[in-house]
Length: 241
Image (cartoon, rainbow, N blue to C red):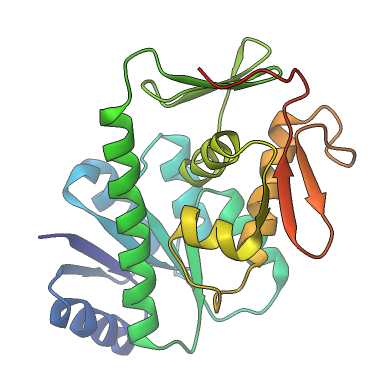
């Protein structure tokens, strides 16, 4: 049974979220501050399937918790809860490695649905890796993705991607030269329907460009198709391995 950790300093929110996840068949643990959450997660990350993490926490805020976990290569999926409306919080949270975000006040049903989508995507990714041969790679120009090792290199040098950036790059490479709408990317990479805010796609594309493009403002690989979405182009014209 999946185990969800709910981290929020408001007891009423912890109780509400815990109740809805338990009702949906999940085991739930709750914590009221960032430092306790960080220590609990890093001690045994394999025990947890998902973390619901509030941004505004006493002592150590949610962004810092997320940053430290990703810095230590702890890849448990994280959904951020935020009462703030500033775009910078969304951008920074996703940049730190969060998988998704939900704004307060939120619908408990929506939060559970988002969690299911994140977990479903994680399960599918693990199955894809297991099914791939030990030598399976995807390549375009100087970008090389090794699916068995879950590594990405650019011109021979390893680069550090968040789990979601890796998923997005893999999907782009598997669909080179095809125009992909934001809704399509949401559905296939995040597992969400088109009612979800598509800014999450644009933020991840921006971060991915920063890491693989020589000039992110004039991208060679990830081209914007105005009014539609994106297209990944292979400048070398070579196919995947």
